[in-house]
Image (cartoon, rainbow, N blue to C red; front, side):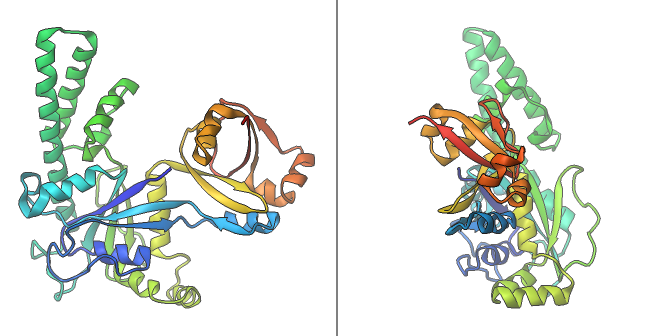
Length: 358
């Protein structure tokens, strides 16, 4: 199961620098001029998970395979992007294809790096991006509403009436300048919303790109309920050029327990509303990704699609118990091993062995 997070923001806010540090590459061009990135860069990043090494030690696993998330470096947007300014239509189409958005906002001062608005104002920068996303969504919803109302004239079924009501509610939200993710939807509503691929429906996390390693969290600058973290893209780029041992030593000197990138990857994973279940044995210990709320057959299907229909039952335990009692053999005599059926909702940190018919 593949998930992607788009990195967006104004030009020259540090998106490509952050992307290169994330992927430990020079894949994204990071230059001091707007639109140096045209086509999106895609990098697959491992999700940090200390549980894997502990499980692998117990199982004497030959391989460890972590979960991954794809980050997409999307070119800088500018005011007027929804009308095509700065190749905006092309860049907006890239945003529609990702599952969630990380918006990088400049909060560092450097006279040598051009700011498109000639001033550092993170709140204003975010407002520019959010307005362009809303305006683009407004066009999409207006078009859908117009087409739906034409169908309404030829035969007013309950389903069409409900859809018109939904679209008018969404339109009102966008016209007021608010993202559509803040509204509440029924299951039927979500089918329509998913079809439209609205950008303001996607979960969003703000990354404040600061001068240096933050000593204390910044005040919440954005809408209540919206995630916000601080990262120094410059520092992360420096750390990415070091060996793991050198990077750890540098972090200790800075008084930091984890890199900003690890913080971002973990926050992005949560942003997608994902959980990790684990499998562990001698061949490999592996992290698997499912949506929060997934039931056991769906989780089994992540390993192999045939497992969904063939699902019989699952042996489940908490990863800490797996370590404490020495793996599957110890779990069977511990009284902590659970036998779960099709209705079981997989929890983060579950170690699972699926029984399936072939």
